[in-house]
Amino acid sequence: MTEDARFEDGAARPLHLGAMDTDDLAVLSALAQDAVFPVTEMTWQRSRRRFALLLNRLRREERAPGGPERVQSVLVIDNVLKVESQGVDRAETDTILSLLSVDFEPGPDATGHVLLTLAGDGVIRAEVEALELTLKDVTRPYLAPSGKTPQHPD
Image (cartoon, rainbow, N blue to C red):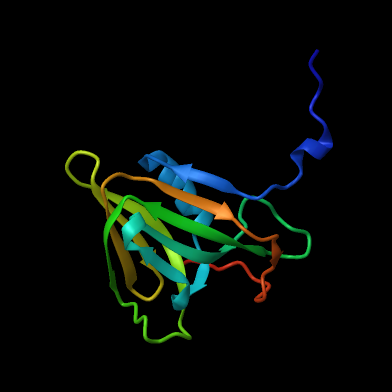
């Protein structure tokens, strides 16, 4: 026996996405755009070959009646061989970074570089053996403190 979908079935749920190819990555990048995070919330676990960020992601997938919402999410890049950055000073522990996009530069075979482009000309580059990222919400949504959605020039 089958049942019709119910209104309650459409309730908001935490986001949990994976990206294993560039099409998946485009969706993940769009959902992570304008996420903000303290410079202290970046971790490279060399032995696990994993680079992770704790982001305050702008929820673009649903419009809240009280204004724009954010949610804390973990962005994980797996299969990482090396991490480099430009325009990011880890010693400035009060710095807040803003993520503009997540892209992939393919190399030979399945290797390549995941590029995290930041506002203000910063970039984080993770050399990977294969493209594998996850984006997972880890808190409930909250109203964005600014009350505004970031605007980008056309």
